[in-house]
Image 1 (cartoon, one colour):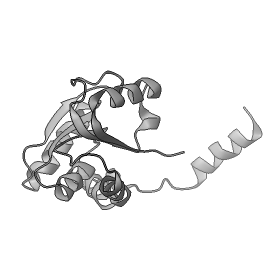
Image 2 (image 1 turned 90 degrees about the horizontal axis):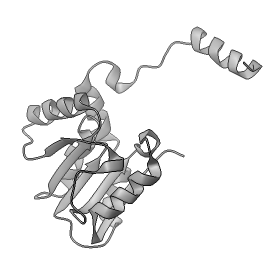
Image 3 (image 1 turned 60 degrees about the horizontal axis):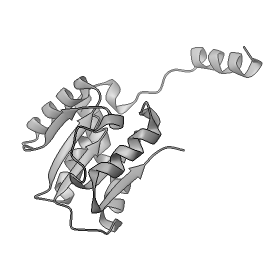
Length: 158
């Protein structure tokens, strides 16, 4: 173990762990997702292509971003996909608690999307690429599932 590794590990023991929005309650984290979706919405509006009628929120987390997308594009048929069943249950509870209905929630892997080719006019994935098991295959799947006149909105940490 290098000296820098040892310093970092020691610092982790000394400094308190920061409180993150989801540490208290899932709804709090979903509200944070909702509140921090400005870049997603900006890119949605600037994406061009066809007028989206169908969208996939790939790696939907606890549902805050999905809620924001639905508010941005009323009438949109949106599907929320996440690999974690727990996230989907929490997203469903979050949406139901706010009177939001009609969002299909599907458990699935980004590298094997369970949808037909061209099924969506928009695919949105934010802060998820680094979590995918096979990022390259996931990108291929997004391309396969977006319509020819659709758009993929991909936001990820460097």
